[in-house]
Image (cartoon, rainbow, N blue to C red; front, side, top):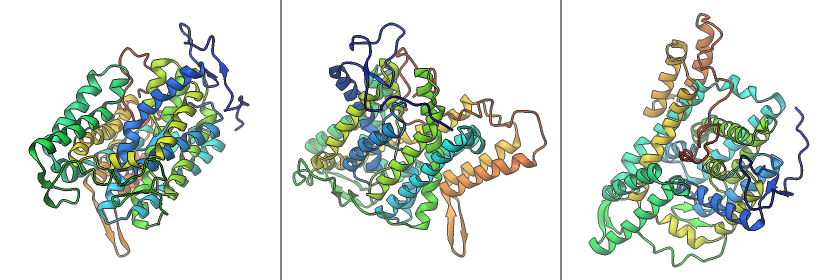
Length: 486
């Protein structure tokens, strides 16, 4: 497949007078506003990606500073590889959190986690190469909406025990308040505020924890390891020692730059996440194509490969995995500005923030109760996005060849069912994914023919994304493509 010859990804023409798009107009990827307005738009993109990009590394036990720095570099790589035609920001992927939690629960180290992340990135890059050479329909043939929705659902809901057993018990009161704040802001917040519900909830919970420490003293509750002790909710002891400028070397609980290690048990748990990444990237590219009214199918393979390479590089240096962010698609829908120049500004700002270890130390001190309130909403949303894929593609569950393998795989993934054999065990997300994918395709061949529909819905050729941001707010020029959550 031959790509159309685009202009340089680092050269933009000024749209109109550079102030604002006219009625019915959009600022295309190869255009820009005045540089002052472009910097302002870049700042909006930083705010949109910020909450999820530094929260998810904390949940995975990885360094948030390094994650933000690598997100900026990953976005630059993505813009170059897609030749500046697919405006998108690459932030920390939520899809890995459940698999990483399973690796941690089994005693896996941070090096083994990042090794599995790096290998998953390699697999995604190879998928991107296959799509680039064979066309976008390669994806829909292997991963129709019925399968994609099931895998995203089991990945998200597999996280429920982590909330109940690790985060929520650390401070139930703060967790409850934080959860309510996230919910209210996400629904009632207008414009940018609604897309920052996670960040707002984190700040409110953080401040509430500090106030309770000052007024009520330390809390007696379980810590992240499950050990009951008396301790302050907010421990800022490491913040004073962290420099303002330096490499993101991390903390003992969230290592920064480090080399990966490769463990078969970690790899089989994490690699199935590639299914969710394919769905995310595919849906986001199609959403941008709908908004810009351009055919971006020739760039889908490049987008997948770019995200795969970025994730592989991140894992190789001890960082968090990346994915395209729906939060930023929402910003574009609201502003009608799709200029990649704004994304370059956001990427540069993210790199600069990444070189501030003191900021990372503050983030790493986020109280467990605050994380409990955030994750109880986010984990459920990740799982329900799988159900949304089914609904939007009208998957036909009246067909047993669709219902049976999905039902079995989902229970295996959510319940942590394992299959033990002489060489070890295989279970949870990995086993659930295998049962869904192989069971779906295998049983369809055994089922009697019932017509042209294959049971995966009429939109099987257009997988809907497992998005990572909040829905575009009502009245904000909702994009004609999939709505934009992590």
